[in-house]
Image (cartoon, rainbow, N blue to C red; front, side, top):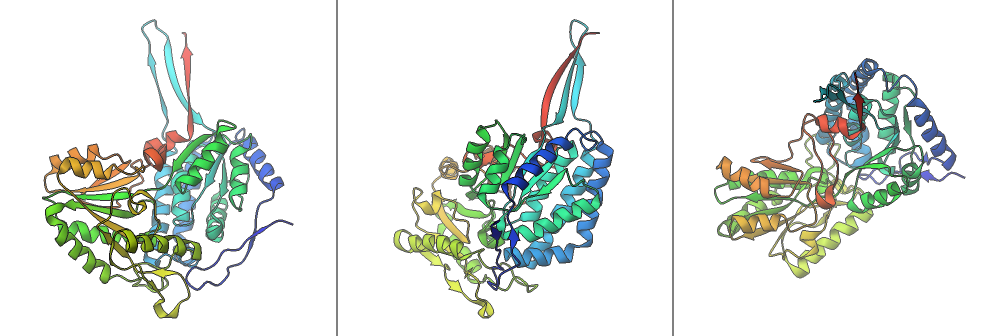
Length: 459
């Protein structure tokens, strides 16, 4: 008998309808259908793909309220955040519907009168393994450019958010994506592994933990499947001595609780000059003291519960570590807003923490922020680069030249200057070091899903 996925509403802990996991036969059939579709009209008709992507965006925009409700129900994220996710998804589809009509590659004459043509072709059937925290946006962020260049897709949604993912994929089929081009295969890690290992699979895109990415890399090595990995993060904010401390720390506090801190680009570390440490602690304590998790279904809620009991146990373990090995300034308490049974945690601020501590070195994936001090600019860069991750960072200074110099020295795929968490479909994103491989979004996002071929033409 096929196992079933049993998602739960993280706010009420009420079970959501179960969904059967894909069987090995279904995985094999979908992969072979996706492979066969690469020989059909989908990869060759770029104008048709552009029309379909635009129509898909329109259908999602028309059902924005219903999709936001689904996101709140399955992820526990705040309703305002859910609407932002839907809007970002629509933008990804609309942007890439235009890019689908953009010819990729180049040609030129060589010294001997021959011509070199560099042609980009769709890589082939691609597996998309999506996370639960931003399930719609992070699917379409990668899938839209992949469809723009003509691949076929095998989607393995996170078990927690299988319903909203299936709804979005159904809208894609309504928009005109052929059923043999886009497949949804629910399941756990075993389904994802089977898809990555399948001989028909040419590429895989995953957003998830570093451990999940490493497992995908091992599976992909068997068939030389190309990986696109956006993995864990440990984003730091460096406030230089001349930076606007109040504005920066207000942004840090907000960025620490997005999706209850369950986001790879969440702000997890604040680095300030040692002379400003006391002021920084006061400002962050005040900010966190005014923030509390709430019912994500209410319009004024800033952030909701953690996704599960296991997530609460993990983050609470780090809070306990802060109490025993550092200084817990504020927060870290389990609360029950309105008597709701979900796993709600007040945002925690930790000070007097050693750089070697797991509090600094590990991806906690919860609303916990460390406050650390540096002696000079070189020390600030050293501390920012002292973790194995490299997904995102932020630098604050009134001196633009100085800020840009520090931003260049920080080892992260995205560095914001005097801002935080600003992402655009036009600009590539991705991680360095243990935060991943490859880039999505922008022209680089298109190229990620292509093979580059050199055709040499003698006239």
